[in-house]
Image (cartoon, rainbow, N blue to C red):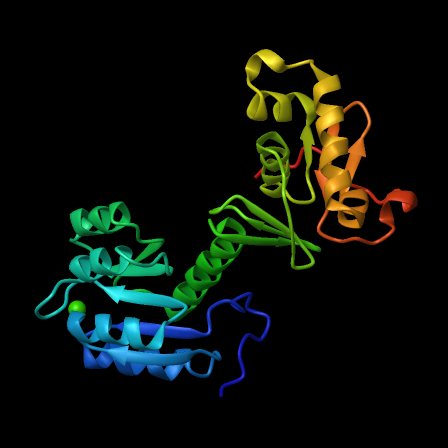
Length: 251
Ligand code: CA
């Protein structure tokens, strides 16, 4: 096993599948990515890429679009049928249409040849961070696990059954972890725009939600009086300590 992630922020990308048919580019990538801590698999055709994808389950794919035989776009389309693994496509300067098609097919980012290794590493970091923050599936917030795909909630591994509005409140807060979501935004999103100002409904539902979540509800959901609510990642006793919050911080 290789040591992984030396503060690059790529803790979630360890296995990197590189699809590249040019030997010189292959050598360059191998010489630079392995020392950076990635486990690397290099393939030169789309068919090999699909085989390596299903057998090896890479964390990220660097995909050249111009390949002999099956094109990179076709590879991407096939992968997207079953997986949302991050894919960075690589295109030549005159392949703008391919680049756009690749993004439409669900590529996460793209690089234009020739590119510097540092740029590639930066893109891997960025995609990895986005993936971590925007995963459509499971989200762990302190003791609370949000399964956004199946609308399930667990606290320390125990399922908590929530009503639709309770779940939606929690999911909304969970999309803005550690940030204040203002009361009117919660009302508007969960109940509808006409409910702005109906703070009584919000408070009642919120207190039910907190109760169901137990200790996590008490310590992780924090009221900002007159403003809104915050779902905190940590369960520390910060609420009493008056820790500063990044109020109104945008995406
Ligand atoms: Ca190529």
